[in-house]
Image 1 (tube, rainbow, N blue to C red):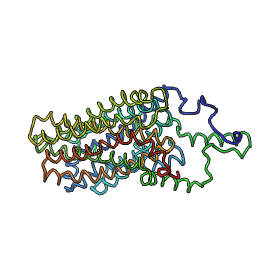
Image 2: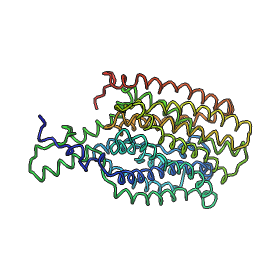
Image 3: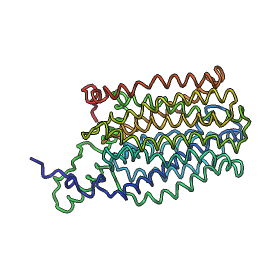
Length: 459
């Protein structure tokens, strides 16, 4: 018999359940989330062509400084536990305001250490990479989730395409500080839209509903379906440790995090060296060199469109009228894993041999297309498999990915210096190819691994 004191949604058609919100509102929310994600991507990549000028102005030349400047440390995984404690809406809004403040700090920095500190602080409050996919999981059923996750990635790709162009020409015309002012202004405009969004996290929604019903009925025995006997500090500690537990004790999380990290590491390596490669190999000046990043943006756009068309379609076909299991997302991941090494080889050898510059740019497009075809199915797989704790699962992946994104690019100059662009990228392509069997193995054994007792984690 159902406990009458348990507070849940009022049936499967409860309008307060985010799954039942109108499609128009859901997609409007996706659009606003996408725009904020675009600001983060723009804020990251807009600095890429300006990094040499920044280092020159501050009389620095370290490869480590260059890497940190280009790639903000997206350490927003701390926002996951806070969102599970206080709700996603309030944490997202606070994080966005702090991001704006820290961007202003970057624009007004007086030395390299101050600038790096504000870049790291900006990365600390990036909410989109941690919370967006969990929000999609809250609003969309599995048969629509793949397309929604793909579409939420499309708008940010404009940041990848336009960021280097804006950064390159803006730096040449007005100085590198204006790249930070542009991010500050644009993020502030998008933040206005966030004020009109609603909470999607079911735990928080039912907690608020329980408080309202207690006040209305006077029945203090009422408790949420997700009620915990833990204190807030214990809930936070549990939530904060959950990504670590998932990374250490869930084979699925560890495997896909490792694969995703290597793929992102290779892209970061290419992006941190792209400006220098085209300036040295093709004598491209600072403004036009920003256009070389177009290949990466176009490739990502093609990859995201492909995922939008294929992810849900292939999963529904594989289900054959039955339940869509998370593993049905992985065949698209195999496709991406095969494409990416081809792009690395084309980019490396054609750049080294001074082939017409359009060809290595096309190589970078293939690399980024392969990355999206690999990572978006991976994200959808994780959201499907760990829906309630998708934020924590994504945080675990982000930790791994950021380590790779910081460390692997540092290996680029020594690798290219010793082997050259051709053989250096050939080695990277071979390593990426070694990982291709992983999604194939997960298609066959993933569900068995996920549901085994050894994979059970005390959440």
